[in-house]
Image (cartoon, rainbow, N blue to C red; front, side):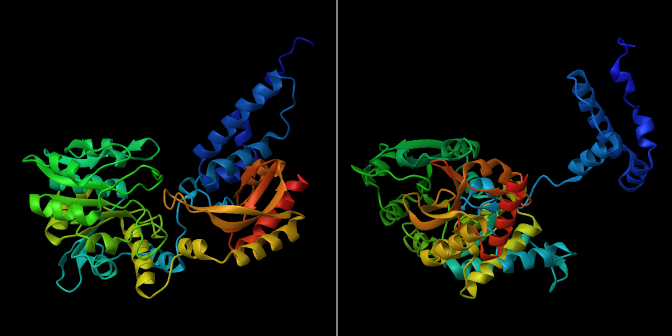
Length: 437
């Protein structure tokens, strides 16, 4: 008897699937999915038996495994980091206006590429043109799926096979290992570096511009600043040089803002300074969905629209719907959640932190919030957090919904600048649940 193999006591997959509870699940979700859950569970049970443990209720474990297989991987998260435009947590949260447009367009058919007046094929690029022209002062506008795509498309349209002049101090890495020089090369243009990391003068550009030059590219230093012994050429000076030489001036703003916000240059100001094309993101300080926006001179925007890459980089209907809702909010004098979070008075944030601390037996700590998304890297925004025991950090990330905070000096800080009033009780309930485990 002592030599019997305990693995033989495990039931077969077929016998498990014949169980009434699992058979009902197979009828509901399909046999293949329940079969996968059963095989995964039995594989773990075998390892547990080999290690000397009892596998327990196999049918219950298969049910739990099935729930995991069906659970969504992309989940809502409560951002308690104090980083408003948090790239890892989905960047800007959408306004109710944007969400309403997504729901309206996503629930049925739309005139995405149909001209209702003429009864003929239309262009998806027509829907946001008027809004973007009104908000930026541009002659024309184009939307693609992110700002890197916008830069890629613009350079391919105006400089493929020719030279693009860029300051060495602006050859930035834009996140996840992607670098401006790499994007530029993929466009088919040839990079010409000028100046030094900390100083690039107008005459550096003048010496570099020649018969093969198609464009001058200025890249906003979104996620860093160079301070001290520095010199940069102003956009107006570059615009005059570009006009004299007959080349295109492209201003990549990165985050992109429509109004005044710290040292972030507004889109309208770049155009007024003489930039021929301006590119910026939709999901950073603009506060909309992931998108890349190109605005500027009508003939150049049309060249980008006609380029074959435009079709590969174009946005879908839900992106356009969310962006339309966001831009309409601006047009009506409103502001998206990201800008409201950044501008909320510190006293209101502290009151929320005190409320959360009272519900969780925590304490209030003064903190510094950040804009995030590569924007306003030097800005320190006064904020307040509910401080809890460090051991809650991992359990809260597994809560429903997950709560992501910051661990610092032996404490878990839940920064309330990025926690909304509606989320305070949710966070408190998650803390209570984690402590009771």
